Length: 401
Image: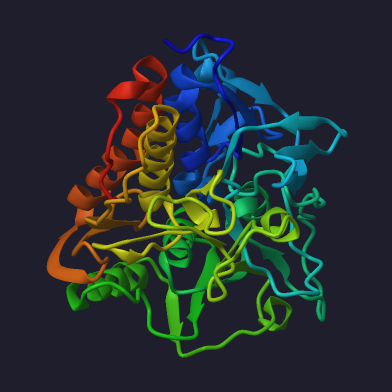
């Protein structure tokens, strides 16, 4: 029988959806250290809601980890040494590990040289930023005078955008026609009627959805007063004619630490290259999960960034590591998508049914029913964390939505 002394040392980098779930599931089987400078877990899928209301979308890590034995180290990882199996934190600590889970997530990709991205005071590195970006100044809410450039925001800085748009009017542009851009545009138009909102996208709106799904998104946004401009390429948010620009054009993984450590990266995505069990193809004692991993499965193909794959990959990595601790070979990731959910303000939404490979089916749910379903799914992500804290071995394969 394995004793406390015999337990291996496992380090989990990042306390987002994937990293936190992996840590909770591994807790009974190893000494687990969760490294993240935040003291709170951020519900990233609620980021768009913060443009309208100052409600919190985070939970204390201490309460989520209570009674599990997981040690939370509130520091930022600065270096990884796979040969020595050590990490270095921003205060100079050296930590040894037998196995490591790389779960540092992703962030909005802002063009180089854009200095005006504003941020509210730092909240948590359990957020999608995982503490890797330096704090930025709080938004200045003074009226814009020509020819000043617009103030630029991202999904991560929605609290500052909420402050700017409250009790004012003006022109606002959301750049990006994917899920993030759509949800932000709808939330802003519904909650800030004094603002003129445009949605700019280089391609077609809501790519990846069925015709019925795209049509519904377009109808709702138009009814909310959003002006949709498809085929509008924006290279620099500072060139947009607006008082404020919300940049939601693309996401990039937080893989700088992995790259500097010599981990193999997927050349197409820049994410950590992993095998079918989520092990690094260059360093099999390291698992990568969530947005940081170039994960794939036989049913889904390549997994896109997002919460839909974060929880399943975090859970699978834990299952694979537990198997290795017991002397068994880890299983391949068996994952398939089921739904895509889009918030269209507080009273409408879209649930797009998809095939396992994330391609859209004809079936959709819309209106209040879809908004209700989206809220239930969002709440279920936190419920999974609670179940993993209380009964970690009951969590198995998770669906893709």
